[in-house]
Image: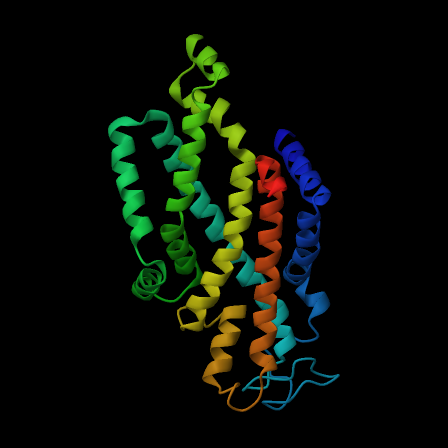
Length: 284
């Protein structure tokens, strides 16, 4: 019940904020596609339903691809993988970053030095080339893409969480809990962590958009799972089939628009939560 109440409170924060409300409306588009694709898509995305390379029409809203599959149906069903990868990678990255930031900020000392050094090194790495290399080594598959994105996107989160923890651990109520004999784990997970929940939620939402972009980039490079439909995979197959040179721009533009809408939606919702956490942003 406590977590349900926090979720309801978070939704109220988002709806009351103009940016958050617009973001929530935009996010309903891909979420509706992912939740009920069979009610929106006119065909099974794997079925060959007509001749290849048909232009958009009333029968096929976005035409057909190089093998005769309905592109609009691909777009609808592709939202599932794109959102699943985005949310999973964001949660994994925020989880790692939160744990690292929590421990380094609370304990300091040698542990802080070791983990902070790892964080700094990770932040200095050119992310995209290393993500491509790791994804290529792990092989095709969206679980590998999730792992790759999480591994290279947690350091920035860890640094921000660490700063928050270092500030919170000196608050009087933490000192009082410590005086009553509360263990370090209880202090971290019972007293400090709940105070940064809104920030963690904002990170998850913001990183979801970034993860969707990363998935699209890796899938575009042929590192996605060819047995699954995703927006990035659609762009990859469109480029391989010469969609641009043959004038079939809608095959690439449609998934590009969906990626843009989803990323913009997550950014607006994330900013709304950030404004709630840091009221000074409202003035800016």
